[in-house]
Length: 308
Image 1 (cartoon, rainbow, N blue to C red):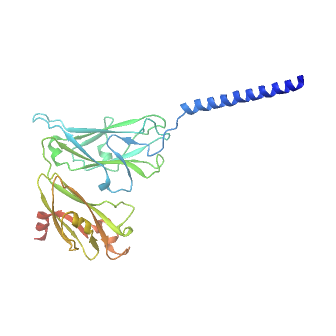
Image 2 (image 1 turned 45 degrees about the horizontal axis):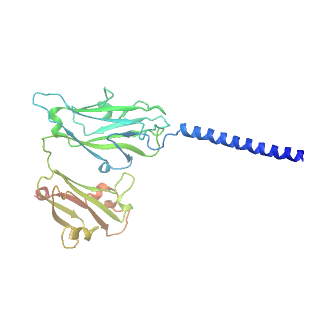
């Protein structure tokens, strides 16, 4: 009887020790899990103005950043400036890999400058690109940039395109940071402009990859109605009749369409369908630049002047 009790007691003791061991292992793993976090993967770069976009994307797809600047007094000769930053932290965690990138700038006026951490990088940034200092792994690093534009040149600035392209050793996602900056001065009214963009276009595809094309037409700073002209070659493409119905025009593939656009109606997305099927040997299907000769968008005044 005593032997049975001893065996039973030993079993209970072993079970108790086993439970304690399991609990100790669990709490130990939980503690480690709670403090050893791994930074999230991704591009590894972030910015207050530049946004993530594929390196193959065309500039028409870059985010537009409108920068409104306060008008300077007549006796203030200092340049207009705006700033932005690039860092290796996006959501509170830093990248687990060292990051390095090249900054490029296009559209900067002749006498304008760009600085990184108070060092002038204009020549390199507007040329082959300015390589930024290495951002160490697991260390939050921020690069501060300042763009300075002479007072007398600010009115002539249309768009400044800025890109931060990571090197392949830092990031192999094929993405980058980019944006189109449009600085303007409060009280100075920018002129009317317009644009027609094939929104499916990237540097890695071509029109022959699609059975239809999405074409976005836009007007900017339209303080009054403007008569716009859309043309397309009816031999190759047909306009979507739903768009014609939307703007109150009788359906038809006439090849020419006039319609008004203003501040309220400043953008339309129009689909064009291919008529001759996919033919990769056709010149007009070989590049998006060639397709611009098939579908055009302009203001009526300029269209009439071009015909004279």
